[in-house]
Length: 486
Ligand SMILES: *[C@@H]1O[C@H](CO)[C@@H](O)[C@H](O)[C@H]1NC(C)=O
Ligand SMILES: *[C@@H]1O[C@H](CO)[C@@H](O)[C@H](O)[C@H]1NC(C)=O
Ligand SMILES: *[C@@H]1O[C@H](CO)[C@@H](O)[C@H](O)[C@H]1NC(C)=O
Ligand SMILES: *[C@@H]1O[C@H](CO)[C@@H](O)[C@H](O)[C@H]1NC(C)=O
Image (cartoon, rainbow, N blue to C red; front, side, top):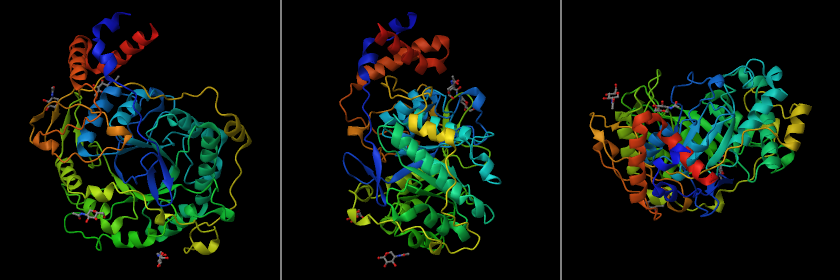
């Protein structure tokens, strides 16, 4: 094959498929299964193109373009991100490059299993007719696509299916039904447990009820498959530099979830009513007062119409940092790393309450624990697995240099940006430097030969220059495949 002689041997030896340690839920915490350290989610919601930028027909989603993921992962690694949440994913797409790149830098992935397409999610206004075998097949395909990546942290079975009091009536039972089906599918068809949970809108009048309803165990059984394994809250109540722990209502959030039997975190945060965002809430969220909350995901990575971006992804593939990025990085760098890397405390293990109508306060909330039964075709899928599904697989990462320019907030070029293999499979942490100043931290600690990988990437860039820089990633991966097949 023509391509492989373009690649120096160093490229092929530089990468190794080191896997991040898998993460599990233990009581109120996410825990690294190897080090037994607690993992606070230090994340960002990742949906370049925005919520409307997804089309199933194109087979493209935020995790199908390895070159774009390499660029974004390198910037996120410097920022200190350890988790990305991706909302709309095509289960038939090829996510191996992106998943492998995020794995390489110690970034976990949380996937929404649903899609904004017809039949791709439970219909808020008509849940029963959308709970079908073909809907379930889609979400089982999502499990197949992501179950083998070690950095798959969890699946959101539903996002904001309850978004007002009306939708709190009939929908709760479907959240549990979908969780049951997903968890049974994982149990029978994956090699490890992968947490499944819910992402809630902050509808104050039914928020506590939603969490109680989803964390409780029907019949008091800890292994109740329909329970949430975690509870994500989309929280925008801390706005601007004048807000405080109390004025933002964070104190109430802590009180509400203090005794949760499952991890609670912000699946979205970052109010943008005051711009640029200063992100003072980061000190609260990862500080002593909020250790019962497992961190959160900033909404969101790229600048879209709704004006929440940390960075601008330019049409030519370059990235420009926004002031929000700079401010967030300064906040992350101030955090107490002893606290956020603490080992997990078994004292946080709390038995789930037994499900009962008495747990629920609001009369608007449909506290039904009699779940709809799984459609029989879907039961067969759960039992036998899907035989024809696209199953993702982690692979070696060889291209480490970012093939696009990255500009600071003042327009200066940030040079020498590349991804570094994470230390011994642990989650990425804040770098302590400020990318916006043009300073990058050398996070490489694994003894991977950086000289060979940078040499490899510069020659790959050179070769790619002739055929368009966007195919660099594909070119290298194709080259490796070609050699492996020889
Ligand atoms: C949480 O548990 C502690 C200790 O049992 C108790 O004092 C506290 O009232 C509980 N908080 C809530 C909100 O239930
Ligand atoms: C890419 O586009 C941005 C924004 O339009 C521009 O500032 C930058 O100079 C361009 N960079 C390259 C390398 O073309
Ligand atoms: C991948 O993303 C880069 C950066 O945005 C872009 O230039 C390139 O065209 C994309 N590649 C494909 C195959 O879409
Ligand atoms: C960091 O957190 C640890 C663990 O809670 C605590 O003992 C220590 O005092 C904190 N350090 C600072 C500077 O606040």
